[in-house]
Image 1 (cartoon, chains in turn orange, yellow):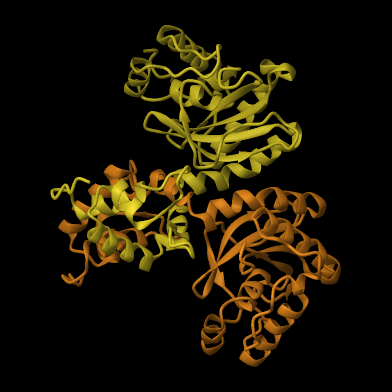
Image 2: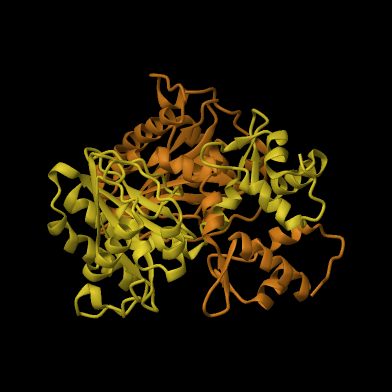
Length: 265
Length: 265
């Protein structure tokens, strides 16, 4: 364990919160101290303060978990629950007319975060979890978010190794660059068996009031019964409805010309 | 502004997060400093650390908002998104067969917090917000959570003034005490126009693996087309389905005898 005496108290508190992951949502005090790289006595004091406020809760098993108070505060994030509340009626409509999986995601740094998901009972299984992260270059929502991301985000993604999930995942930077240009040209993205060999997703952008792409919505369907060209207008229309709910002036023109396209990098 | 030099850094960081509310989700730095009762230079440093980590985000308008990173960490709260993920399929089923409002809530101290809500398009309007709080003594879910709460929570609620929303809100401690005993006897709660004069809710408990009541689920319907006695088994069955999803051994006996009743206080 490194004591790192130079770290600020704030960074230690945040490191304690950072210790929790979807794979390890319950931790003992010593696990917390080790993961946050904080000496045990210090960790003990900080954790007690976090429990008193409600950021952490201590279970009957002695393990600590993220507390409801932190969930409440987190629910005030405009890019989280705020976006979700505005998008949900449209997502439900899309689900009603297709009975397929509907997903909503935003970009955080070089990854996407799933904000909401409606899972079709009889639809193709998807592995996403609300609050879970995924790479940008494979899923439909990821391709949309990457296609409209700032140039430096695209360049960083293209410069890093592109992880492969299936034989159809795009891992060649040149091919990915052309795929992103195609997304900007058509106004939607198709990921055909690029994450699992049974699923295809069609995604479209959601724009904020300033016209920038702030989120993406997708339908995920079994690839053998999917017609991406038929699904695209449905998903694009949903994206435009949610953009309007966000206060975005949406023009009647073609989706791909709603706002000036970013330069093709 | 009080400087309060004795306060710990942790408490100051948490006070900054506490400054955000549903009514004020975007704050300037000076508003943050004033609400958290921290001197401006200190607030500035702490806020910069919170922004760097992603707990706060600074908008184009210069105001700070809760960041997506905090929403992500909050989504790991077992009593928040974890419960919601397990409950959602059952809530959707309940919605499909009724097309009425379905709500899920947990108790936090002397209030309830709404974890999820499916709002019927043509159902009676409800004012709840996911992540929002409400008093325990008026709604159906609140009456369930209060009926099965520890004795000290019941006594604190009964000792405090009971806020009135309609002429039918129970504000007399003796009547509320009898209503809670009735909830424990029948295994469900009915709030008939006790929050708004057009709505009635029927709620049932959700139990954790140790048999204790950890949440409540309700249907909220227009009071003039509602038959609480007919709705109760539907809501109770949903509560039991979710309890089972939580890993609770649910007996085949009557709902009100699933676990020993708490003493009537």
